[in-house]
Image: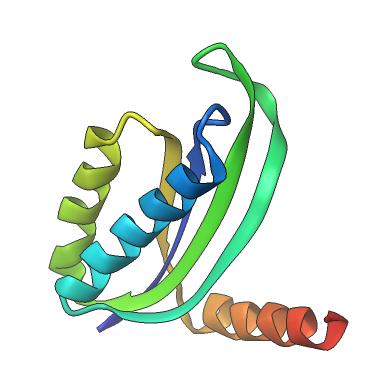
Length: 112
């Protein structure tokens, strides 16, 4: 099982319940394919560096998960099929990036 991190941006015209439903749909998809969800973050509505689909902001979300390698391509296909997703990026974390992610999570917990 590989360690992955996915960040995706949802359309800013979605309501709060639509955003939650969309995030839950992608989380359920991963879990149904045998992935282990390690962490998820809602970064909220943020301004984009450049316009995407004539939008200047978007809802950012982060998933950190462990899954077999063959799960990632179908998972990204689900992003492409969903009109509410403006952009996504999935990266495989090596041991140094995974350690950094753990440090970031612990800093988030101590800040709360």
